[in-house]
Image 1: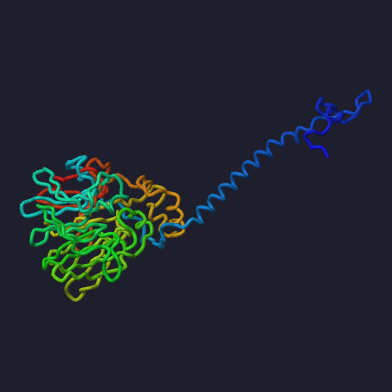
Image 2: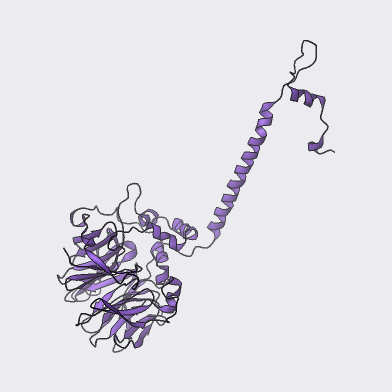
Length: 428
């Protein structure tokens, strides 16, 4: 049997090529016409075949990605409503632009601050280092982990180099530091000598610490701190936010007995917090769901919590007490209403399967494009009422504010990654 590509060329086929009609001519010779419809369908069929192949390939890729295990196990979370309008005390302004940047290129991610009685300011940075700031000069104190050249170049090195977050001075003038990966430390601010008080591997109640974050010291010397997640470390904070789990805790450490107690559990990424002036309660940020809760320490409600601010205009980070008795909140990422779509986390929150699928396709570093360079800090009353807000709509001074630390008339503004220290020169 001959291959169709090599069949003999018949007279009929030749007649078709020269355009003879199938009807008889005036000379009685049968006429034939070329079947253009059949010839033109051949490349169309090839195009259809190619399109079908692409569809099959895309379907196979989609199925393959779907079958790959997701690194997160997300929960459904629905925000209470759209973000509040930018009016009243939240009205847009440029008051957060009235400052300056210090130590550009020298400090990367000064996340939180404390100060001694002489006015020296202390902070920790993304490369695992502790610093003292005095009269706008910078002095290295110590490295929380190993001091290797790669420190600060990638979050992958943070478990080795350390990452100091919350830090405060105790009654003896020693720094108490929450290192996100390693645990609670006591550090001499002048010699740099470090003492491990409680390791993250030891944790509490049989659960290791995964992401130590905020820290405060009460008047009686007890250390309060947060473990933002028992599952995800700081370098995977975006997984923590997307997963929207309740694996965070508020804990306390007794420096005399060394005992660690869990005060609150099942929290959504608990972050910074601040005591009231009388320490009868504290306000605590649940970052991943844009909440602030009040946890009572004294009185008839002691040991209970209540939500005092939800559906916030942004995701809160640290909370600090001002000299006016109000609470200053750094907003790490704004949550504004979109013209066409709701904010990203509002949009995907109700769909755990979608969140699982997204993290398999999008590298962690790509989420930065969703972060607006918009600086925002809030001033709250004791019941969570918004009293005031300072904005930097263009990020000319700062954005992604992690801390608002008042020292006299100046306000030191923290961040997790920015390579400078913004200072607001007055609250006006």
